[in-house]
Image (cartoon, rainbow, N blue to C red; front, side, top):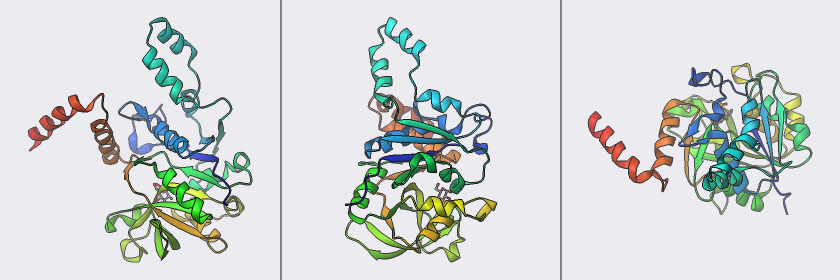
Length: 294
Ligand code: G1P
């Protein structure tokens, strides 16, 4: 039996420059898809996969993320006074259990690998998940849940992957496909960070969800700068791959890259169209807008 995945790390220290001016004073992770912040989608996904402890690697200007996962006494008292029980129930449902969140800071922006390394003390010596909140997943079961199910059979390290346009491999970490396993999973035999299309090992990209063994921290601590002069998680995973197995889990669902504007807008439309309380009103509005463009 593989050790259970109880902890998840959310790297949320990035500056969000692609969304300025929205992100001048507000963390990009608080941008909303319909009415839930990006970070809430990632936490919901982790919770559905059985995660018990939520570790946020934050930075300056990110305090509001911590507030988001706390009780808001004044707000709740006001809602309660006004008899807004539905809104209160919604807040209560989303609130993490006391003691189940931890916050640490990445003091300098040295890359994703460095951000994950900043969580080493909080994770300790057990396998853990990493979720990049920019990548919003739509799938049932959730992406991390699908990975945990694969991991329960394979053990080791598991990365969720999705197909990208072969011309866009240079935007992501891309994996090479080794032996196929029974359940949409396969052995990863290569990993390249942001390869040009002509040298990409496949068009399956690492979509921002990882299950990693704790030995990754030793490798991250020794690590040199890689692509973009940053400490890359992919480079440390490549080193770990010399000693441990990595598996790719083909995510059955849709990925919205909310780190870019088009992906973010598409996510808003896709999630709104599936919301029972909004879709009926939103769909004709969308049709009208599209017809006007047409
Ligand atoms: C990071 C990872 C990359 C992965 C991507 C998913 O890149 O380094 O391997 O495919 O996230 O979003 P970044 O988006 O930080 O450039």
